[in-house]
Image (cartoon, rainbow, N blue to C red):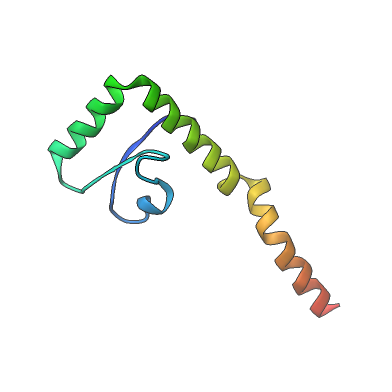
Length: 84
């Protein structure tokens, strides 16, 4: 959606949100850090827009069907060539 996010460094989230590049990561169960991150995005609309745009670009480049197909197609061609 092209929106900046604040997420925790828990589970697999950090694999998708790059701190300071595509969003902001905070420590789990750290309310002051979460509050600071939200306040930063609220007070810095230019940074918020930049993070959101970069997150959207990263998503399109990595997680859409065309991006998936670009990664998988060469593998499928190799498998098809071996079985043909």
